[in-house]
Image (cartoon, rainbow, N blue to C red; front, side, top):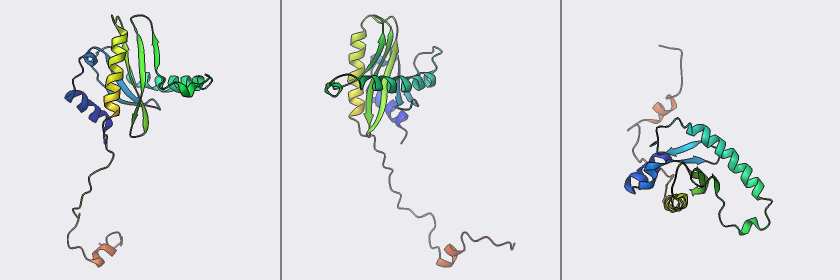
Amino acid sequence: MNLGKEIGQFFKKNPASFIENYQCFICRYDGILVYSNSVEEKSLDLNSICALLGGVWQASAGLAAFIKDAEAMKEFRLSFDSSSSGVFVLPLKINNTEYYFGTMYSKEMNPGQLKSKLRFYRDKIQNLDFSTKQKKDDRFLFNDISDDEMDNLFSFSGEA
């Protein structure tokens, strides 16, 4: 399973007009980039951004552990922004593995709407079935192979 390709296919089948205007990405909890829409041609180094994000998220989760009734908070999110520019990241669960779905934006007239759309698409992605099972191949590599041939398959003799 190539999760990045499957998510790319999801966005092709479910066009998200907002995603075309922003650099959106999905990375693993350890900071490895899984998907990027790669629309923006700026010199953003998404691998570095995701690596930093993994560390920032873990540090933030550690800090949140000190909040009273932290369990009562249904969803943590990471938002580092001004009134029109910033970074917004949501947790994303796929096959019981944690990922982060985020975007970077600048000069945004309505960041609240952008964040709402990101939540909407995160929920849609989260509800997809990204099956990790591969199809079983019932074909045989060899037909009509004898026991003697199997026994000698990995025997190496010095004879030519």
